[in-house]
Length: 474
Image (cartoon, rainbow, N blue to C red):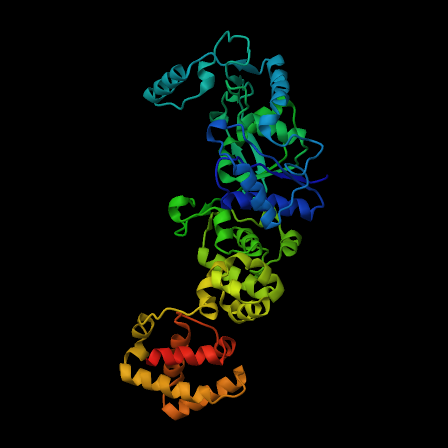
């Protein structure tokens, strides 16, 4: 069997981490088996359609490196790959059900259906539309909703590679809408038709769909379609692990994480490891390793807690793994404006120095601004340091005077000679490195943190270092 998987998002807003994981897992399965990964845009819910959302989905997948074999921007033998462009196809399949007596025009208004619901509620019984099925429905002319007529009321059983063996009884089977009054199909109908037409062998989606699978199975039977493998992924949970992750829990769009300087390698690694592992202690995976090791059977059944701190840790790892030329290309839009006044060699030297401390690319301006422009003095950095706060103002100024004098004596301004002078200053002043070095670092950078002091001063240069030390004593 040629494995064909798909990702079928709706263009109703930003693409979030749950969406991407629902794209990543079928992508990995297709690549692992030498199959195809199809992208399909499910835009039949026009009321929720957001202009530009489709391009955002495509751009996000391209940024992540989840290349698709068929779909928008790519084409393919089973197009079009946008549902609103496939209306006539759905009507053809709907007619098959009508001809079998398994679909009918819904003659009831929304108010009448609501009355049925209230009646069931008053009787303390579940609302089932099939209990109110019209005896003589009108001929469907496209102006009324078309409903599926479920006739085989039975218990369904199926195997989910993630959730295991499942079953559901007749209480979940009902007549549901196939095509709406606007002529567009519902998700319940369209995805089954599209998956069949496109030869999809594995459908991987969120756990919220699991309760609807018996209805899907009844429609597969009615259409005489062999169901694909149906797998449901557990929810991504909020940081407290008690509920599904949502906007109120700080969940952001993937494009926001991209803007914030998260690398695509880190995002893929992070999402793959949320709810899946390869049975080892390994945490860092390249995309190729994920392709080789992934399996649906090792996806956990319980929800995976969203841990942004872990994402930042992974991102820092992936930043450190990049060679400086690659990293330089990726940080192009993150430099402070003043960096444009310096050449590429100097910028790369700065980047090399701070690379190991970066957790996101967006931290670059904060970590490097003092290399390109004169920093503003933030005396709270001194007062907020418990050790430095114990020194009087005169003591701090005296230490900087002495440091200025000794550093001025260096003829070969290199990290090695600077370190030798710093070590001598410890002996000369009798101060601990944590006090003296912290003071010099703050006075020369006015940043809350910086790389190794001797390396920082070497890159700043002798003239700039001495000028900043002198400025503090004035």
